[in-house]
Image (cartoon, rainbow, N blue to C red; front, top):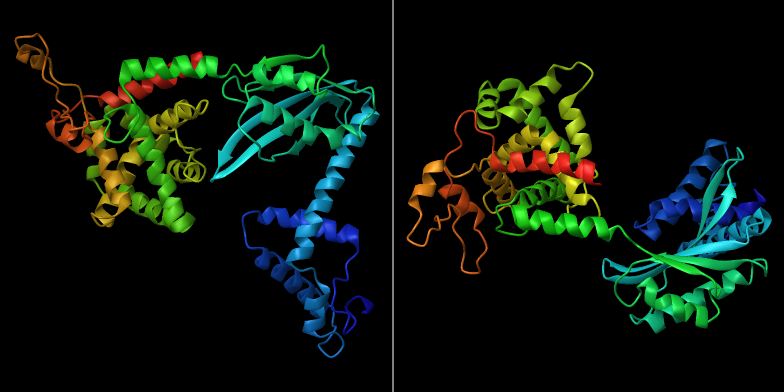
Length: 428
């Protein structure tokens, strides 16, 4: 009763509970701050009224005044951050470790530049097993040159080092191998600035040593990803884009709407199975085997997978193989979902246009052997995929010019996807 005494007009919760509320409110990251504090006040009101305390005893206004506002929650987010950093520093000090390693990485997300710095250290878990602990310092932005980045790292490390034992040293550094933040460039400067031990070592990120050759080989063998490109990579990109746009435009409700339509088509239409078997027999046989398996709800699994898809980009590690694997596993429902969208959406809809591209690409097949006999005097065969003025292949025109898929044929892009999925599993 005393907590919400009439006329106090300020937050009544103790600091430890305000830290707890601020920590929990981070679950609403990206949401409205006003919505967060309203929910806290509404919860307090419901609890107070539920235990029989009336308006005359504690007014709704008093409850609202006694709950934290937006500025208080924002202030205590800093308290939470400081509390967590100090807890981790204490953990490091008590662990007995003498050396830390550090990872740095710069980037941009949604127009916001950042420079991430993270400490790593050896500890044991609750069962006594050795493991690695982590302490994120900050993501503060800085300049692009190696000198500016090194200075920013020193600024971030200094307050943390003041909380650690004097004998603890930073003896390892990992990060990207390109740009101003390349570890081979900033490592000497960090030693000069006294941030890292003079005997410390650095290790450049070697994931690019795998992904770049894979990217170059894919482009050389199958062509590039991009608008107007008739490649398996563009097909995968278009398919993922379609399902992501479904989420963006209508959320899970729109995904479920089209999933229901797809299920209706597959359950009630007699022609879909014959169409699929004629157009892509391998994929159709695999899909029918899934349907016949009582342990799997094929459509439910497919629509569940649609909720967390990452765009396939060659420069992002393994996103392309994952997208291709999704495409191979879900070739049939992806095709018929695209058909359903074409039937339900207007021709000006972005979903309609993407779905048309998907269907066109999924039904492409190689040019027939006799096309080779049409070579010109220079010995080059005419392309069955017309190009636009900028030299890019026009997807719609290419689909129209390509021979119609015949019964028993496997679409060329499906064959490529099969190969790339198998290759990437062994390569990576």
